[in-house]
Length: 55
Image (cartoon, rainbow, N blue to C red; front, top):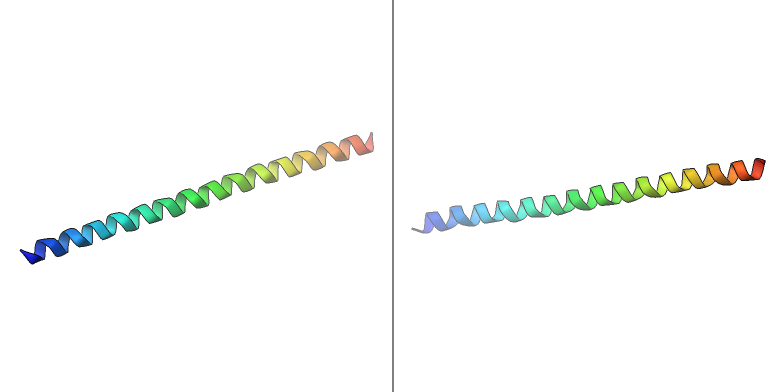
């Protein structure tokens, strides 16, 4: 009877580990998207300021 409890414990441990991994992946993807947005805004802002400065 105790063996079944150990197996379910391992399964629940794997589920929580998978949830943590999903959260980490979501966090990394979110930071990556924010970084791309900031980079695009900076590049566009630099180009606009450069063009307005030249003209």
